Image (cartoon, rainbow, N blue to C red; front, side, top):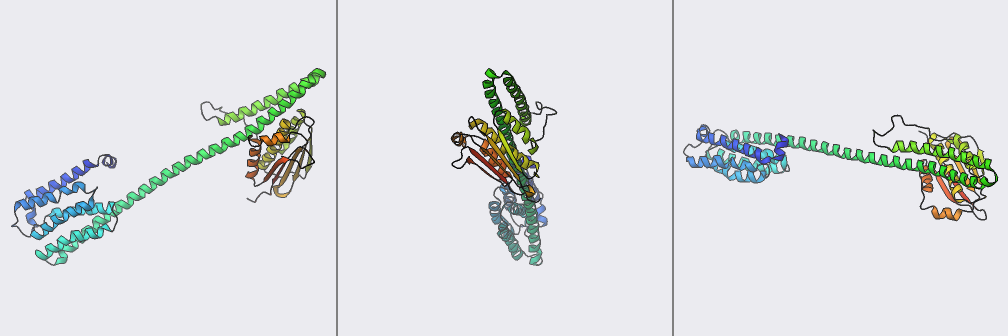
Amino acid sequence: MRAFDHRHPLVWDLHLTGFWMTAALIDYHGGGWLNVTRDRDNPDWLVLALSLGLSLPLLGRRAHPRAVLLALAPLALVNAWTGIALQATMLQLLVVFHIALRRPARNLWWATALITTPVAVMAARHPQGSPDQDIAPVLMSIAVAAAIGITVRTRRDHTEALEDRARRLEIERDQQAQLAAAAERARIAREMHDIIGHNLSVITGLADGGKYAAAKSPERAAQALHAIATTSRQALGELRRLLDVLREDEQTRAPHPELTPQPTLTDLTQLIDGVRAAGLPVHTTTHGSPTLSPGRQLTVYRVIQESLTNTLKHSGPGTRAHIELSYEEKGAVTATVTDTGTGAPDRTARRGGGRGLPGMQERTALYGGTLEAGPRPHPEQGWRVHLHLPEESPQ
């Protein structure tokens, strides 16, 4: 019913106005007003006019309650002055209800004064008992009508506030989901860059080495091709797993996707062996023993992987790399990767367009660490990447 009234307010207004107008006319035609009137000598046309005048304006009670009450005031005053005392004046309480429902509460003061003035006039001009017997019931009726209006208004405002809050929470939930999805896609993009980029760089190094070895040592060339095939299968498997995660269609998603744990520091040996097989000599120095959380181990692993990948891509022939790891107490770690390559200018030019350095910086920032990447100080040549992760904060 509320929904229908919201869509077609005129229908309800016409029905309610017609109902009260009919009641007023029955009171007039049936002579019911004679039971409460204080002057029976008033003409019928005046009684009829007041009956219609006190009921018809209710049609605009919702849209313009103050204007309707002002329009009823002179009619109520005539009703009191003549002593007709039609009960239709009680219809002003409907208007009071809508004033309390739709207008500021201060409007109730002048509405009360406007309604009680004719009552006071009737009590003075046509007394019937003490004046308080006429005024007190009217004041109580006004208070009840206003209280009902305020109660309905408070409940309506509370409901609207709850609906608005639910709507905002739903929007916030959707935004959080979108942000989480974007963050997850960015993370997967970093993983794809680190994994696929590294493997392709290794494959490129193996292919170049196999090309030079084919003429002089067919066995070395065959070993290079075997390593290329192994690395390619590994890269293809990693790519397939990442693409399975990116699929959003439940019907096309694998029911049991193949999952592998994220690499840790124990996988560094396999990583370095692959880089060595691609033709880049790598020397490692380790101080202390690792006591890092899995997330910190992944960060160190990816930074070293990206550094070695960049060395394979840009360092040039005859390059050597050195990795120095220093493990400190409470999860602090320092990793430095240097090379002796001559491709530093090329790497500097590509820093702004690639994803490698931003990805390393994002990973480092997650744990409040620092990352420095740039050419080694003169007179040394080559490139240096320095990572430091501070102590883990207590949970």
